Image (cartoon, rainbow, N blue to C red; front, side, top):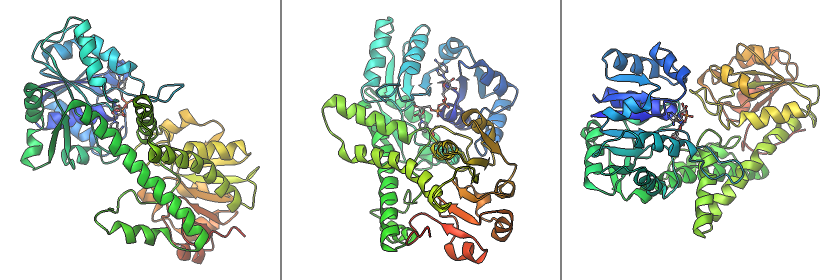
Length: 438
Ligand code: NAD
């Protein structure tokens, strides 16, 4: 099939490259011409494992092309995917659909009857209806509008796209269903479940999925707080409940709260959708509140581990990206933590294996180290914020020798208290027994 992918970011580029790898002819479009120039020169705009090789091999075969000219890509396409950003709108936090609707108006100028327009961006219920209306207003007829929300995780995006837990297609007509079935056919051969629903249901399914995962994270974080009060270990509690198939082990890792480019904005947009529909979503509302409060609590945790004040103290921070294996800094938990420490007068030296370039755009007054040991050197405390694999096997004795203050705040529970203490460190995990700052 001939596919136009509008928006060549984390989702558009991965989806486009994977569709090309399935054998389709994909043209990825972005209005950011520097991104397109880079891709045409073999440079990836994002850091994602395996992406560069996949893009290059499909580009060499001529199945994957890049352009800033939306109209040329859409003219040729049988399916046009919209994968532009849908950030939280300033003011009320609802999904900002400006990029989506701008793209639709551009698409409308050249689209031919029989083409299927598919939203891959995460969009609120009813967006497909609004797109249909815009196309109609622009005089377009005979075009289907479908929803195909994306569930890939950054850091494992290609594997997720090629081996999805499910594919959700919201389509109101047979033609759109058939086109999407054909596009995903290689995955049906691998028996990936496909769920065909109404368009509104598909749109809501994506928000419900992200909100549920956010609930799980906030739930285990509150259980971690309880563990600290009653001297229990949240790692064991999580394992004890996670082995129950009805609960599942994933997203039960206590930590500094969820962040990233999706959960914060998608939970807010779900609440806004519910508000507009006159239905309260108390669980999601509380989840957002729990997560927001957690950010401040993490700053206080570091402060308490440093004896009650961080002013003029040096804090080493390991990991800045919102999760391992990505350079994405959007709404990363490191941001409120580092900014909170800096505001309280701390000197922060941070290290992230790949996100430094992005992080430098986000932080002011932060020094960057070239590795974990450099971040620890002379610091009063070392804080693990993102659980990159390379932080899992640090030489703790070397860390202890480099640190001035011998304090390890492990917000991802990468280490055990015993091994940290054996290395001569005061250890503060999350939910690992009674929290004693004395
Ligand atoms: P992104 O910001 O990385 O990429 C969006 C791209 O769209 C940008 O490069 C931007 O320049 C481009 N763009 C905007 N308007 C355009 C237009 N009119 N024409 C051409 N290009 C245009 O965003 P992302 O992280 O890839 O997210 C895209 C969507 O996918 C969002 O709705 C997001 O919620 C959803 N999503 C993201 C993830 C994820 O892990 N990042 C996972 C699932 C779903």
